Length: 505
Image (cartoon, helix red, strand yellow):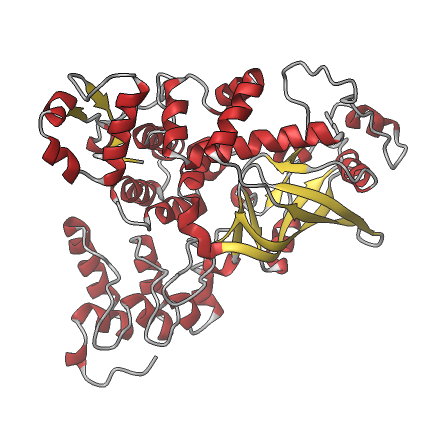
């Protein structure tokens, strides 16, 4: 960044951030909050932002104020740098990093095997194939406690069982990514779980329950990002949800209980993230008992077994980031010894279930709130093969090597055939992902109100119907065909069933 010689080139606020005028910045931000304007505008004459100026000139208090006022930290200046990259010292850079207290050390760390993966397992429905027998695991080690622990894990390794489990995953994804598939799925549930309205309600419910009720300081930013997702009709809308996920809040931990409120919109809009599909290595820390590690050792010797992610997993392209989280202290019972474990994820080809959140170009900024983490977000239902388990004897730490197994792409037609062939298992999965429940908090928000389209009016105004958004037109026409009626006639399609904000999701 070059020094500004002429004050007329930039605004007063930019100069105050550059010169360290804390009182002026505080007054400006107070007024700005009332007007809801951008606290970090790009100055066109110098192609830089106030946050860049404050970072470059080492004005720590002003940097802190700007970050607290939710300024966009992902903006790039004329030199292709973010404010974090322009920071003049580590003290400034530390302000951009995730807080490292005991309550927020879980982002890149798992505490048990149950937090990480499911081994490929048999669905609940009855299986008549005699070849599908449950495998009894012989532990690599011989501690008595390990035998008892490992036998509680359902592990099935026949080819048919493995293909069936993969089939459930590919079918779920295909249904998510098809408008017709989402419409059909909504017909099986009164809450229409795949509509934008219901997605918004579920996400708002998490924010209300986990953030607002607990007076989380990031509540306002979280609400802003969610509202941007609900109202932004551009291809960028899904990126607001990803940034929401990366905030240091209990929103992240709530998704450990049920990832579907975020997994569903991500899979629906996955094609919009194509440029970010990841290839390479990423890392994640863990704390695991000897019993849990023995399961991975077993998987190395049983090559037919696969692991499937249960939740979202934050991994880093920077090994030291994951190791730092793996080294953090966690509370465990005195009789359980936890080992430090580093997972190394190998994605040999581009994987559409691993999303690179780092900045990939000047026009594709970092999607994470914390750019130093170099995050690769691994989605639920991602498959891995266990390649190797290494133990470092001096430190009693382990390294577990996993290789991604790509899911085959499935068409909607083949997905529907799969559902008809495995109805019981599919319905079990559906109700597991979309349990019947009402939100714990109901807030009056215009973005959640149902809107209706009078189909009698549309039926009598063909020209108006043709001018509608293509997605909406196709949805209305399909609804008429699905209900086996000759023409669009009296009645309503509610947002909760098909249409959201006058658009099919």
